Length: 451
Image (cartoon, rainbow, N blue to C red; front, side, top):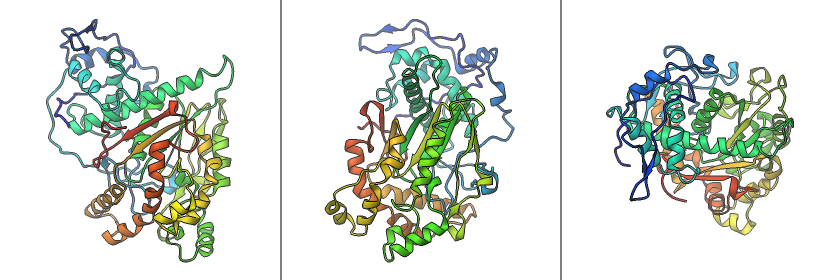
């Protein structure tokens, strides 16, 4: 990736300032650029600070405690993200709360120079997702104040320097998280337009199908935050929340003795599908103010890492009316294949494939818009998990050995090899191409130009 100048995010307090690009003229190369626009981010900051945000309570003082992104723990089954924070973990005694500690970034610490709004505009328009999410250079120019606002808040959320960003951090916000957020906003607007004035609008369920360790949980975390700061109620769920109880897992192992793919949670068959139907049905009915429900959570540390459903008293509560439900999982949208196909990948996958037949009605039919994170090689999952565990150990936290990582990931690789090709070529089970965003990422978990 080219070394673009780094943006200095502002502490914006409004989505709509009266700072606009001057008139955009069509250039000879059919490109658009601001005409003689030289105002720096510091100037933008001064102007934006004079505006009032409709919900200032959402923004805490820079030194106050803020929620941090969900990250890997050695028993979680999900890999590390672009911000490798090895001192955070889910506290099952406080619902979805996170304990705070230092953040370990996988990015270089060297910062770049302060950039102008024009530089930011050009940087955004050079992103690999611009065309995919329906952005044009004109649209970016018209909404540049929103981009500044979102970028500022993401800096605060991830506790990165608001005055200096590394180029990878800048790319993660402006080439990935914010473009995906604008796509989700468009999907919500289209969904809402199908209902008449006065009608109750059910929340849009957006499914995120992405391999372990590729950063999907952090992406969902960032999107959920952006929805909340823009006044929308959102809820997050993972397929992990619907794993069988410890008792159910033990029964599954007994019924499939010798099958390594069903020895531990993870593959199709290890989820409580009736429970997922009950939960997804209920959450999509939260259309009125005052309606509440608790979202299930799973304690992956229970029973020495085998896991169990967390006590319901620890589950976080969500209140209606919900605008959007963000539902993520490593195997979300997988389609069953002919038996002879899966047996050539791994004979043990045959029963898993049979189990998968019931998953459309339990999961996929609830999803109305899809985001698929595409990887080039399933072996990346092993590398990402290994990186996470090494970082965990270096930080003095319990982590799996290299051999344990290899054994853990090996239980998922057959499903990746069997189902990812069809997922990438045809889309998730029951998906509509008009409501599908495929994002190809590299080994560094960054979007690239591709499908």
